Image (cartoon, rainbow, N blue to C red):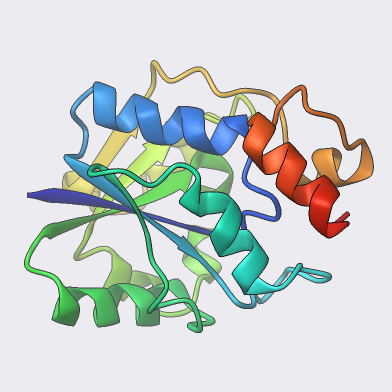
Length: 179
């Protein structure tokens, strides 16, 4: 089975995140998606508590969308992927946006990640080919036809309304005064 691994802070989870997950499932890039919210991230500050972010993600959990609550404390993607590989029998597909391939060679142990399938999705009109030409791309799967929503969690935190949020997430944020 092809298990997509979608790692991020999801601070908060928004329609752009969920649209991507549904796209990958509907277009059969993967059979299931494991969403892994991180406790901390090397470049993220002011994250709301991991339990709140997990609770918001749980609204979307079903037989094909799983929310990980066991691998959230890894600082680096390579550590998380290696741990998952020990815990699951599925073929792992790391899901990243094109904005991540720009500096992929600066990721900790990025060479080790190249042993996994890597799904790269369009984002910010980045020419993915410019940034993948120096890698062995045999494990890269590039989603050129994906049309992302032009939205970010940063924008949502600064302009909280329900335009890009599921109503359940919006209500959860308001009830818990998260942002």
